[in-house]
Image 1 (cartoon, chains in turn blue, cyan):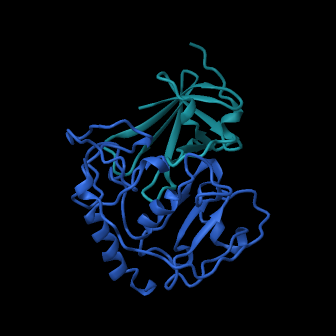
Image 2 (tube, rainbow over the protein chains, first blue to last red):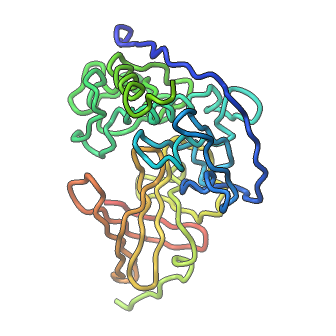
Image 3 (tube, helix red, strand yellow):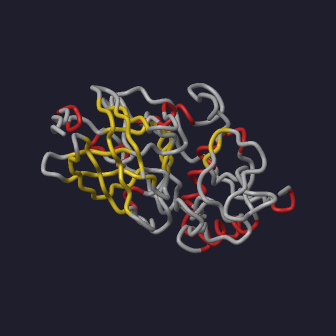
Length: 192
Length: 109
């Protein structure tokens, strides 16, 4: 249905360094505690030059969270639950295909959720080639999920910026790629 | 109708939405110490203070809950939390219809 709207971002990161920090915290919240030494975490390494990716235990079952471009340097990067990171080891189904990192790095490169973060049809993800959607989708939805008069195809729940399981999300659109590349040419230009 | 006493447990915890346990009738909230399963959907939560104020933690655009100031009142033995969610057309209300030591049943409107 959306095969003509699948776009390769051609954005790749090269691993610079893995650092390991011992902590007495059994888990972290979404309050950036993992990014501060005073709360058992570790500050980012030169966030103007590197995408910092914290992997840690997160409370309340949270998979991860991000920071949009333009936020404080001291907290810039993405945080991912070790149970939802990568494709092996501690990664757990249905979040063991690495899609949490894809989703969070999407935010880091200025992408919004495809439903526009409102509980009705008024929100926008600021790109025109994702259908307007009323809210997030979960699990592995059955096609079509129609909302906001977006039939017959309905919500693009297979998009990386929805809330479905890893196995159910597999695409960005051309305008999402344009938005990411604009971030890389603008506020994220010091990364490359 | 005689007023029922509010459970002190309500004020001891941050209460987290355990949406996997929701029914058609009510949402289920559990204390933060609960062992919640993984969820891409950030769990909404609230904290109550004795002075009538509260904080709601609602899903944010960066996948983490965002704090929103709220207030609570007691009506016929049930506790009502009211807040205005950013970007929402109307006020958000959570009515706690049943309170146990580690489980709350909540109606959201």
